[in-house]
Length: 251
Image (tube, rainbow, N blue to C red; front, top):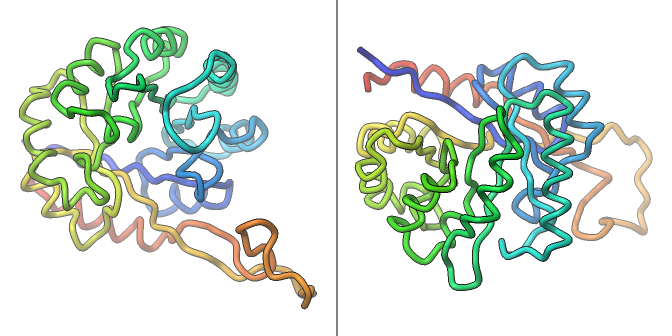
């Protein structure tokens, strides 16, 4: 019997989440700070979205950018952010902690996973920084993760397709795998058909013109962000195109 492909769209603001739902996404991963690869969003954003979308809402639990080795203070912050996610009736959280030697920090991951229940828990791309993907997969299963987001240890999922195939075979139904990084309509079919993975993670990023009419000629950017010209969003049409494409797949 055909298996429906699950589409997760990563979003960085309220508008993007609404557009992702409009396009037919099954789930959103809500983050902040795209320039840092995604960090924990604000409580207000999370609460507002929970009240205004009806698809699954997963929340990034990542206290900062950079590596995935965290101090005790940062670990405490992650616990509190999981609690906030639970307060807002999020469907899941997305997290991952590594040891300095490149192994998964199973002990602390398990503690966070236990705190998150009954929400679902995804291991994010910290997995791709682990020293050995086969070892990390077994560690994720032992820690209790429901899902792993991975590019197969490469910059783009299509480059790691051989690793993704092997990981899917190794998982053998014990944990779900979701292919992410550089996933779009040009490679979705290949990723699905050649790996057997039935979950895709992508951004469908779009930038709309700012509503600002006045532009300060002396200021182009605040930090690394152009605040005068463009606002990040999601292209609902691209999400819809991906939905139509994968719905034609027979897995």
